[in-house]
Amino acid sequence: MNPYKYIQKFKKYGKKGGFKPGLSRVKKLLSYFDNPQDKVNYIHIGGSNGKGSTAAILSSIYKEAGYRVGTYISPPLIHFNERFRINKKPISTEDLSGIIDSIKKIFDDPEKNIDKDEPSFFEIITVIAFIYFAQKDIDIGILEVGLGGRLDATNIIKKPLISVITNISCEHVDILGPKIEDIAYEKSGIIKKDRPIITGECKPEALKVLQERAFKKNSRFIVVNNKNNLKISKKNMKYQLFDLEYKSEVLQDLKLKILGDHQFKNTSLALKAVELLTEKYDIKEEAIYRGLKKCRWPGRLEVMGRDPYIILDGAHNVAGMEMLVGFLKKNKKTGQKIIFLISILKDKDYKEMINLIYKLDNVEFIITANQNERSLKPELIQKYVADLGLKSHTHDDIYSGVKKLKKITAAEDLVCITGSLYTVAEARFYVKLLIEGGL
Image (tube, rainbow, N blue to C red; front, side, top):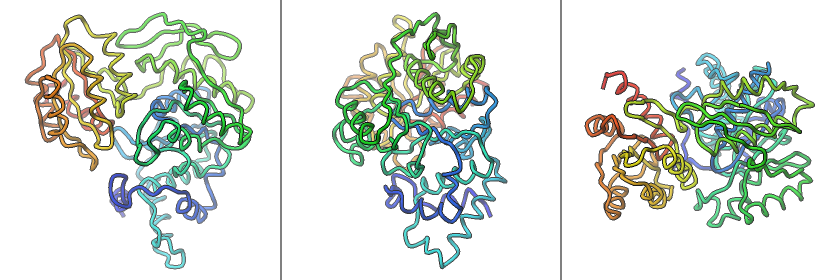
């Protein structure tokens, strides 16, 4: 049986029946596998932006410390198997097939009655993650929330080592609620009784909600502010060198090849989690240095070309675009043209995302559509861009957009491919061909 074909039969988010909030289906299915989610120690990471980067940093540090680390992310950048990694290595097709076969047997058993309330695609892959990590007897798991938190499939875990909420911004308002307080409430659902919660959020209205939930759960509440003892020594388009507080001292000359000022806070969150778990997981400072230096997170301010510079960033909402635009402002040369190849999902605030880009000087757009079912029609973005008086080109697909990029880009320009991780994932393949002269 082809495991990928079987998985695709489950409905994805964006289609009717593809989003099913609640834990009952996951709980029922996992019970047939002796509840593997309870056999692994997890760090649970939620938030609007920065979940993946924080997970990648934690995974890299624990790997360098000699631990066997499982990491569950969503979505993958290139291949489906990237969702489930142990020490940065994706699950093998053989292991995936074995788990899928066992899940299929449950569905094929009429006594189990699973088909009466069929899980969604995300619920199935979350079950796969729990089974896989338990089978491989990992030392620690890094678990990224899919959407929200309270009713997310990953929230089936009862006792995470630590919960982390990176930040909170207005996204998925049709599901999570119109106000920042509503969204904070949903994301605070991963806070568990007597388990610490770390957050990088700073908005008072969101913090109040998180703190109230933490108080009810008797959870130690920690707000990370990376301004304390942060000293940036060097920033360029290759790496960042900085000092940062850890425990009662300051670690000097930490080197991180993931770019952007927001990564300082993500690093602070990761180090605080490591610090709180020191008694259970012994981490030497050398492992922190190595882990940060070796950490990679493709598709997030990833520089692929240098003549011209081509930057790929999966900014998928207003907060993400704000970070990207801030980075570009600091790194573009005076008068330099920025060509954006962009595709956005239709459940995002595309107008506000474009408004942020509008604040940059000398920009031009290639507007296209990625292959995700939720991809916004390019014509809608193009109309808004035209209303702002900005130059644009519209193409039906990413491949055509990258070919247009080749025609209109000069060596002195700056290229930015963004709008969604789905956009970046598709474009990355064609950009590599473009750089190698094969497009």
